[in-house]
Image (cartoon, rainbow, N blue to C red; front, side, top):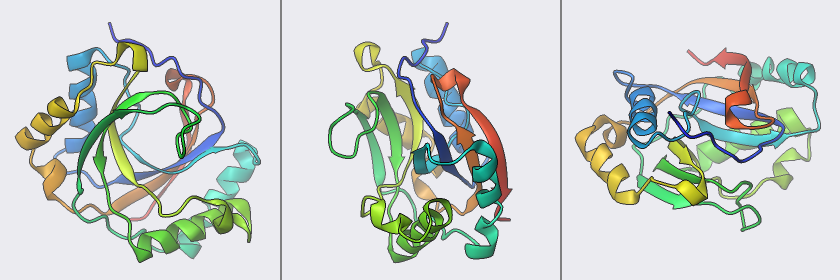
Length: 198
C-alpha cells in the first residue's frame, strides 16, 4: 500500500493544469506513485499561489471567476529545462513545507511574470504583486514523498523522462487554472472550482 504524505498543508491554493500529450503527466504521477508506493498526487499541476488564508472558499471562487477577464490565456510554457529530485525543509528560503519531490523544471519569462502579477492582483488586491517572490520558479511535480522514507531519486527521474520523451520534449499550453483547498494532509485536498482557458 502507498505511504501517506505526513506534512500538514494549509490554505487555498491555485494550480495551473498543463496540456498533456497522451496523458503523459498523469501517467508519470501514477507510475511514480505505484513504483515507489509513494503518496499519490491528486492531479498533475504547476502551483501558481500556495496557502492563501485571507479569503473564504466562496470569496476565492468569486475571484477565480474574474481570471479569464484579466488573463485571456496563460502564456505557453517552453519545453521543461530539465528534471529535479530533492528534499525541501520548511523554513529554508522559499520552502514552505518539508517534503521530498521529483519535478519537471519549467522556465519563466516576462510574460509569465506579468500573468502571475495579474493573478496576485486578483487574489490579493493592488499590493499583491509586491508580496511575491521573484522570479517565479514554476515546476510540475510528478512525485512527492516523506523526507524520512524518501525513495525518489534524480537518476530515477532522469531515466523515466528519457523513456517518456514527451515530458521534456514538448512546450505546453495551460489548459486550466484550478482552486484547491490544501488544508491538512494531501489526501484531504479537494478541488473547489476550475476555469478552463480553452
